[in-house]
Every structure is written in C-alpha cells, then in structure tokens.
Length: 169
Image (cartoon, rainbow, N blue to C red):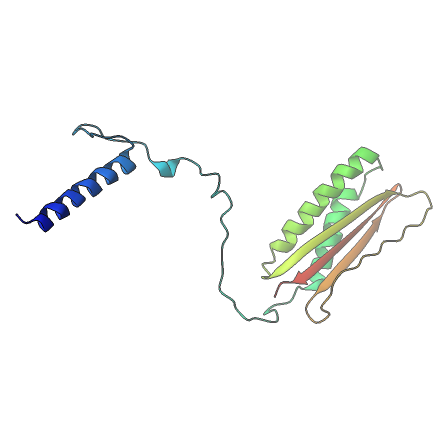
C-alpha cells in the first residue's frame, strides 16, 4: 500500500470515529448499545417561535370586502344578548367587555374574509344622564378599510361596540 492510501484510510477512520462520538455522545460504542431517545422529542427554546416566510402576492386590494350589514347584525345580536337584562356593576362590566370583544371578534372571523386585521372596542357604562364622547385615530385607506358600530341601552347601562377592519396589503 502506498503512503497516500494509508493516509486516506487513516482519515476515514478518524472521520468515522468523530462522527460516532458526535452522534452518540461517547466513544467505543458496543453492539448492543441502542439509543431510544431522540433529540427531536426535546423542546428547543430557541426554536419556540418559528417564523413563517410567505411569498409576496402583490395583491393591492381585497378580493372580498367586509360585509358591513352582516357585521352590524353581529354587533347588535351580541350586545343585546349579553346586556339585555343586566344591571350595571363595575367588576362585572370589566369582565364583560373582554368577553364581548372576544365573541364579536370570533364571529366576524367566522365570516372568513381573508387579509383583514380585526380590532374590536367595547365600552360599557352606567346610565346616569352623563354624556360620553369616544374618538379614535389611525392610518386609514378609505378604499379598503372599514368600520361598523352599534350602541345599546337598557334601564341601567349602555354598551357601545365598534369594529375596525383594516386591510393588510
């Protein structure tokens, strides 16, 4: 055997030994040593938030717009069902605003209108003759973005629900 062949053989043995040490974590693997633990079963903390990259669609407008009458009906239905015979209480109204927001958002998402960001605001207050003004500001594309609003009153409280649908280009 030539010196070149001997050095190549030595390198291949060294490589296989290094590979064995890396993959199994120890030297001198025996015939009956089988690992039944996989590294894939362990959670990796650095891979906890995988980002999904998507291709550009170059879609500048929606294929379907948000149906405002249907959304207004959802707002009306949810507010009347949740607030119809209730009396105003501070702790109750704090929890109820979150619940109503989640229900409205879920029902609008069920309409399956793609590429819209849904923002829901709900205000519940005591009806004692006071006035209230609500205003909001945001960047707005009048051709694609839209909103719907509905207010409800009973003998002791009022509820105001506003939904903003902002198109994601």
